[in-house]
Amino acid sequence: MSIKTLGKQSLIYGTGHILTRLVTFLLLPVYTHIFTTEQYGTLSLAYAFIGFSMVFYRYGMDTALMKYSVQKNGESRKKHITVIILSQLITGLSISLLLYVFREPLAPIILGSTDTNWLSYIAIILFFDSIWNLPMLLLRSEQRPIIYVSLSLLNVFVTMGLNIYFVIYLMKGVQGVFEANIVASGLIFLITLPIIYNRIDLQSFDKKIFKDVLLFALPFLPAGLFTMVMELSDRYLLEWLADTSAVGLYSAGKKLGMLGLVIIMGFNMGWTPYFLKRIKEKDARSDFSKITSIFLGILGFLILIVIMWIPSIMRFSIAGKSLIGSEFWSCEPIVSAILIGYFFFGVYVLQLPGIYKKEKTKWVPIFRVVGATIMLVAGYVLIPILNEIGAAYAVILAFIGMSITIFLVNNKSYKISYNWRAVFFPILFILISIQYSFSPEERLGVIMLYPLIWYSLIINNEERMALKSLIQ
Image (cartoon, rainbow, N blue to C red; front, side, top):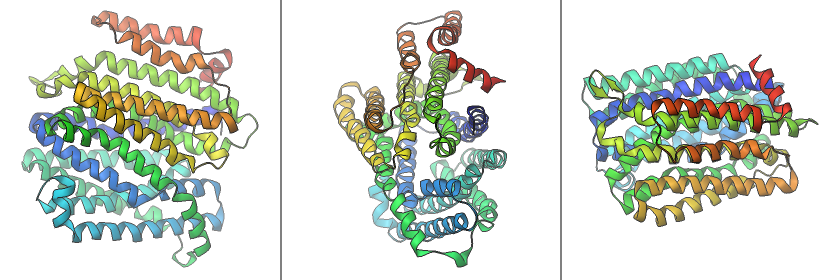
């Protein structure tokens, strides 16, 4: 697979992923006008629990599915897929049943609510989402982006439409959000079942393969747990050190800043199968370096645009109402900080090939431990002083720590010669730019200046050639 192919795949997957996550951004105006900051904070904590629980539902099997479905062929591939799918069905159903059976004692602890129905809804959503994610991974491994994106868009439109119906039309509030997601997840689950059925053989369950897959997958469980600590600790620390209203305000800012994460994850959908195939080739390191320069340059440019225009976006009026409820406008600095944090997450993701090449996946949990520890310590120190923005700064420090740690590990066993100007330029340009207050005309000038400097002075000739090949 060439860099050009990676570019096309990432563009398709990235567009699909952005459109998929668009439901999050499109529903934000609805939520910020209907819910108070406290209600939105409660909903955010509920979805934080869903994200945390999904780690136990997957326990690294999603990563294993991607690896073996790419690297195995024929009957061996079918056996590996069968083992993973059946394992996920059994464990997913078991965990959801446990959540349902113990919903009464768990609901107040997990959600801070005595409404046990919420936990029942969450158990159903978790099961559906954990399973229908598997056929989507198979489509990625088979490089079938059109079907992948089509299913993703279907999920977007169904989820958004049902949320509007349950929350606005039926006026069910927070409960309506859960009911809408159950129906949407259940529908996608049913639609994607044939993809699973056509790729497994229930008679070919192999115990030895199961053992091998489990040994590969399990190191990703603690990695996933610490990832969730990073994703959730900021909100729970705010709940503990501030209040639920602060969680709601911060969550709105983080949701808008999630655009950075959406871009990275969209790119990663093409990046992972690309480097898994290319990693053993002679010129792989050189290409990885070029990709790093190009992707970080583009990522930095998109982040700059959002940071420059987020105040205008939030206040944009539609039918006399601002896009984001005025109660949430003070989250602007949080958006900028979160976007900068995700830039460094992109730096981390780009360095993953060295870990897979040297079979050092056991390091993945350690990287996450570093990030989670920094997040907790920095949040504990900064939140009492700076409130919501302190939590956002903790996100930045956590991803910087992860990026540096993975670089130090790779530098000993899989050293890549990066163009350091291209690595540091985007973030330095952004940091300098946000120190000033610009008029709309000046913002356009700053945004136009970035690509001119980047292309003419920052990237080298080989990177320019690679960029041209992507465009042509």
